Length: 278
Ligand code: SIN
Picture 1 (cartoon, rainbow, N blue to C red):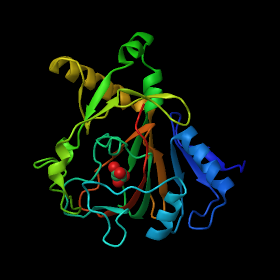
Picture 2: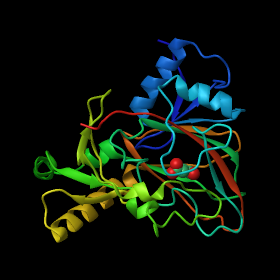
Picture 3: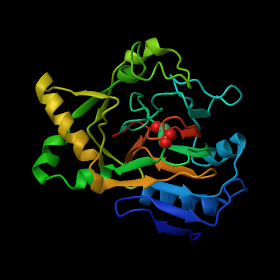
Picture 4: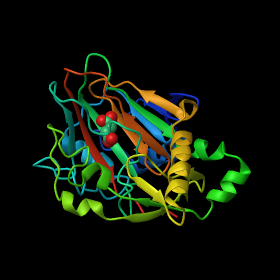
């Protein structure tokens, strides 16, 4: 297999990949090597890329079919592309809390591919947390207790009327009335490629744990969400224009920091469709 030039980003997860032009026609061997590194490191960072939306979409399609977001308006020309934009007069940014993308879908996205177009002078980093490490660090007794539990997910807290994201000025939402549906996923999922177990609850979309009383569910969720995002399990990406990051939504949560008030940030996101978590 093609050898990639990889260096780790942090102890817990993440790697920088050097020496590839993602806008070029990459061989199947190179794509296979990227996919293997993606499954192993969960977050891959590629610097100094120059990608048009078409090139970013073509790269994404090498990993599967692209998705369109059910509630966020895509780019007018390329519906599979979301322009993640924060304007200087916005008061928060998209993705500004720990979450896994679109777990309110029956088949949440496999991964997301984010490209930096315009970044603040300082700030606007994205944090990632390794959900395999968060699971592995639990006691055997807690693991046994979680086995078989089911989390209930909904887009409601973020996208239903009155939800916290719907009034974001720089990005438009759509079909928000569909956001209140509920979807069930295992609290611990098994990665379909590596076979490793990962915690699969998040503070943005997991609203309860099935079969528990309200206060039991709230307490357990609070504990698990804290476990999932402990500093020791994280890495941090500092963006430059032309940085592309791809992350495995089956393995990580992420958090787009909003610490750059008064500045502009423009990222381009495409997502690759995934399967039903088991
Ligand atoms: C997202 O949650 O997909 C946005 C991440 C970011 O803008 O850094």
